[in-house]
Length: 98
Image 1 (cartoon, rainbow, N blue to C red):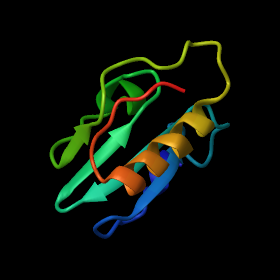
Image 2: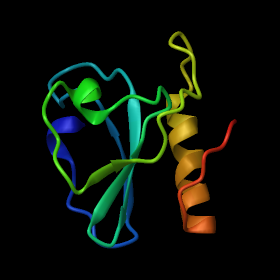
Image 3: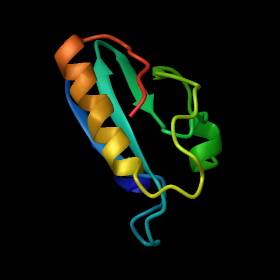
């Protein structure tokens, strides 16, 4: 949940929900730490500030501003898992379509 983002070490990842642990879940986002940067993936292609309604500063960077999922779709968790597989397998930022 967005209020319980874990501390990540280099090359570690997680999938979090954009809602706090006291709210019903809404949308899943992937996080991947590379060096001192945290790369995030949102299947809607949004900025973190728009997802969580708070101001995020560096070291957060977006993997892609490209929407790969339509708003009524319910498969954001699968998109997050696929993105993490690509990050671990290829070790680079990659835009892909599922």
